[in-house]
Length: 82
Image (cartoon, rainbow, N blue to C red; front, side, top):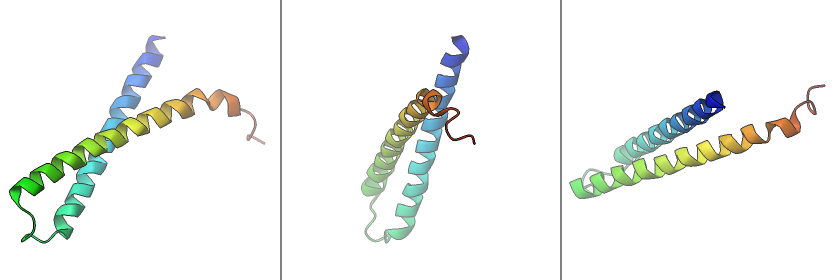
């Protein structure tokens, strides 16, 4: 049981890392596409925070989706292995 808890925790950490990295990547894309004349320090700061929060939300969705897939794997075991 302890190994399952460690696995779920690692899945959560990996999902959040992937989500925050995606948020950071998309923030840099935003930063390069918006002209500097339109990008104030306030807009840049709030956009960075928003991208990180949305990335963390995406990481949570990745975690939940992975749990659903891992939980339902026993249903499909053996059906497609021909």
